[in-house]
Length: 329
Image (cartoon, rainbow, N blue to C red; front, side, top):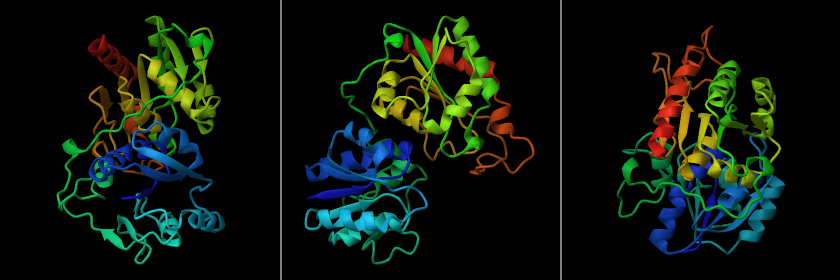
């Protein structure tokens, strides 16, 4: 069975999609080819079960129909089935244009015809991993959360920054692509960083180019902190995560990368749902104040004061970091 998968747009969701890739590999004894945004290609290259990767310049909000037609023409006749993980219309275009016989995805955005095996989300959980795993149902059976295959990454060779070799460091990831409402305050990250420095740890700041402004504001002493936000590639960032003692992160993509590497994690959740896309690891601590307004799922807090993250005290996070480190020592 020759299988193509149309990948999600975001890093965290891309990591979670490995559950479906593994399930297809086990069921059909075959690898999966992936169409993904170009920045995600290194991540899919680290996944078992993935053979060919077709990177696109696709970005949110743009149709890029010419590029889709060109790619679809190269894919014609190569696949028996395609799994479309995003819910939007444009994600279903390439398999349809490539005339792949079986096009499987969830119902959404009036995709009738583009998807000819539209699945209904009845009797499955809210979690992203359950949603992805159940696009392939074996004998009609629904996979529950505990039965879903957890993502994992196999690192290629990478060059470690010289200043981090033989160094005990903790990573702070202060950004989030969802928006500022997901981000723990800069001053809280700075206070936590100073507490960890006093414990003898070096601090590494990681994130994308979009996170550079917020990382600069943390402004920890340069002798104790290395800011690599937006200046290294994703493979190197993954390698740095793999060698770290622990990651402190918002609910963001690097949290899922760390989980796939089975690294210790302390993650702060504010406006997003804890059960939707948690770090898929037993080595993670999730912190939330569990206020009545959570989860609002809003990019901008609808209240005048964003309590869900602003009131999560650095000392509380520090205590959980130390406990998590004790668990793995």
